[in-house]
Length: 340
Image (cartoon, rainbow, N blue to C red; front, side, top):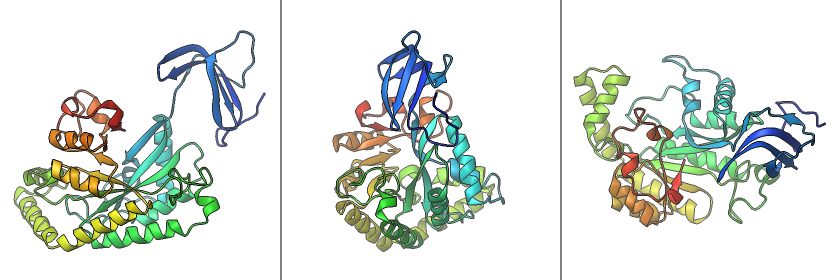
């Protein structure tokens, strides 16, 4: 019988008497055979055969992939004014993810100076959190980074440029241990053999998620406890200050397109609202649309062959977190193009 512990990956293992969840159904009293770290066989458990681990009817199902996780950003700041050590926060996030059955998580790290509503970010810089994710000894969750970039933030642009350059300079035997050629032959890659994923966003009041600036104002009143007048003044200041950064936006978008063409990143687009925005994102090489905010944008994403990513809470009646966005039932995206 194989000897193993929960803190060490197991390359060879037989799980018996499990309830195995497969794409086309469920097998009761199943046997799952793992060889060289890969599932070699799933089928009914033959009578009288031994196993390394008796599941006693417990469910065995594929690990979930969270392609836009906010759990780390919450664990690093469990309450206002409290910032935890990044390594501790990563360990805490890993425990939460494992408990939910998530085995791969792309942590959304903000490469920007201010939050989406223009408030100062008082948690550790994205580069510091990224380093903590790379150093984690968690063997049960594959921690990856979703590099969230504010296209009008020069500070974020400089920070992400440095981050990607440091990734490229890492030893290739460490970077591409699982896939020597990367997920797409010849692409540069991160630990685990993946190209970096960058999601670009522009939360200027009057567009995207905040097409109605009053929604940003309400956010500030509800979350930051601003008065109505202070929130209105802040939204107007945030809009006008971002209007002065159009040159930064144009330079950033051109830079991202160049990285996509070179195979250096995989590009996501956040909160697309119009077919024109979708078309422009497609021209830049965008492969995933995160949270399109209108049916027209969702249709356009489908027509351009861009996968559509939406939040899991949008599937739960009465638990919709993205209330300002078009309902999931009215999205015009074939199931083969959905991500997340």
